[in-house]
Image (cartoon, rainbow, N blue to C red):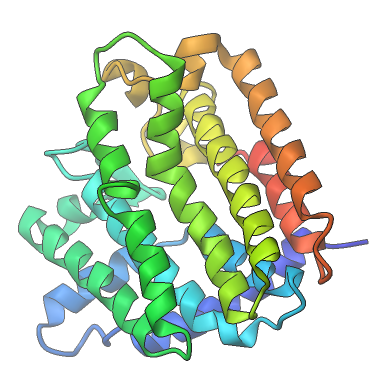
Length: 289
């Protein structure tokens, strides 16, 4: 039987090793900037996007090793997005993964620069791979105004508004889903997947990404700060548009489960090792943080 916990621990260890090697040492000048980068990057985290990248490479018959640097780049970009998301001008959060957010620990200006540096490092790591140009294009499309940044913009702009399903799906798809989908596609690219395999990974990622954000919405209501590692109840306090607010917790959970079922079905056709992708999809709706 496939052991997801063991798989996640081993793959996280591999990504951690690459990140430790590629991110400037915290004693290198400018030391405080590099300390700030490492503070956020090595402050725990699920490494979910890197895990999806590596599992996607395996699912299309490839190996993990060529995907490791790509996985590290994805974690750099994801961490940058969390740093900026926590800033006073955005969600103004004090806690991330059970520790003070970066701007609380190092100051707002240093947090912005650390985030910018991790964003830039992500593309540096991708450029230094055999499929660098194509991978950079995938990540840029997922992270820009038509993806993560645009989703964050609309998420902030919608605060206090009336929940609308079409708008909510768009926000969640852009803010969360497109980077998760890109993580899957990028794993497929390094494993030289066919176009049909990439389509399957893309659809899997879109479904998993939407489910992931729905569960985040639910946990913001049902969990506690100690378990979640960040503030709870903040979505309601800021009058954010969420699935839980739109349809209620139970209906939102049911929708997330349906999306995960759809994702699992979509990758069943792939010819590689698909157990990790299937288990990671199930993990999305079973996680407690």
